[in-house]
Image (tube, rainbow, N blue to C red):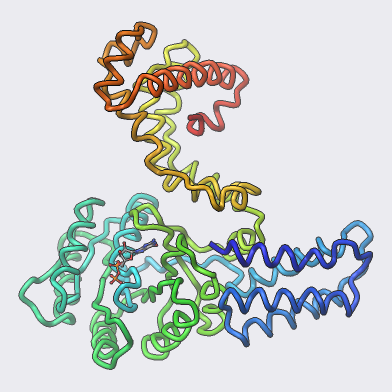
Amino acid sequence: MFDNLSERLERSFKILKGEGKITEINVAETLKDVRKALLDADVNYKVAKTFTDTVKEKAMGQNVLTAVKPSQLMVKIVHDELTQLMGGETVDVNLKGAPAVILMSGLQGSGKTTFSGKLAKMLKSKRGKNPMLVACDVYRPAAIEQLRVLGEQIGVPVYSEIDSKDPVKIAQNAIKEAKSKGHDLVIVDTAGRLAIDELMMNEIAAIKDAINPEEILFVVDSMTGQDAVNTAKEFNDRLDFNGVVLTKLDGDTRGGAALSIRSVVNKPIKFVGTGEKMEAIDQFHPSRMADRILGMGDIVSLVERAQEQYDEEEAKRLQKRISKNQFDFNDFLSQIAQIKKMGNLKDLASMIPGVGKAIKDIDIDDNAFKSIEAIIYSMTPQERSNPEVINGSRRARIAKGSGTNIQEVNRLMKQFDQTRKMMKMVTSSKMGKMMPKMKR
Ligand code: GDP
């Protein structure tokens, strides 16, 4: 995401590269490019204009610092302004209330149901909540089923009333049920339509009045660009929501919505969705998003995500095994599982500064581990725990069993040997404490 915008901004700063200081003339030129880049990224016209005006004012007001090059200073100013544009501070969801009720709103297909599941999972695992999901779409039975399946997948109960045609009643009953069962969080998924219509607005407004939620989140597909901003405006006029969820930021979005929504509706973006999986949710941090737009990478998020998945017990156990040279294919499998838990490989890699651009056009296959896993699963338990016994004929059998070939098995054996050696080196130099999960 934002690849184009990042590149364009980087290019516009180049104008200042050879310059000794910021002048009215060279700033004007740079900002013309910045504004064009923003407009091409589908940022609202007025927002882009105000943005560049503010940047200009700040740039001209700067004292000439010999230690900082004009281009660097400009990057800093633009970064800070982008952060401001997206709201400045990170804003959390309101979870007070017994139970806290979160009402989801948005058009059909925006990703509401998927996001409801993601949010329930995140608040359950990270904040120790005991959530209940509520299916209030009385028009599409498939929507209820979708939420039910997601709930099962993440281990969260889903309240629904198959025969009811009254979403307000369903929501009220759900909250009663949540109270009686001791849930401290209720997430209400509502019906959406393909375009805004009066009926939908009336319905969700009636649900709002009836259940008085702590938090109304408006979910919007970031791929819809300017439309996202317009839809946000209409929902906000009607519902006065508390926060925005931008979904599908993993796609080929030009990012304009992320940059315009906050200043148009004056409501914070609270979360982003970055994929179809239940883990593909992030809290929205304006400053980090600005880092990302400017192509500085988002090492902070990467480390955070790595830490989240970091299983201390497992790390200690592995470390012990590595130091005793006992690391085997069972451990290798558990490492793969850890890496997979961290999410989409390309997403992960693109968060490392400098890497994003380099791998932009490379196809990283999320199934990269499939054949490796197949090979390991085709080994006998003895082979997995004593890789030394795997000779030529065993390799041939494993290749056949896993539907791969002998070269692939040989490659894996070699990789495994190297990993083992490297791990031993790494742990003996204490580095392993920091990153034992990142080795392949
Ligand atoms: P709803 O009609 O608003 O409830 O939308 P859904 O939750 O059913 O989502 C519509 C489609 O978008 C589904 O195919 C989802 O898998 C997909 N989707 C939802 N969130 C994301 C996201 O963050 N990234 C991507 N790539 N797809 C998403």
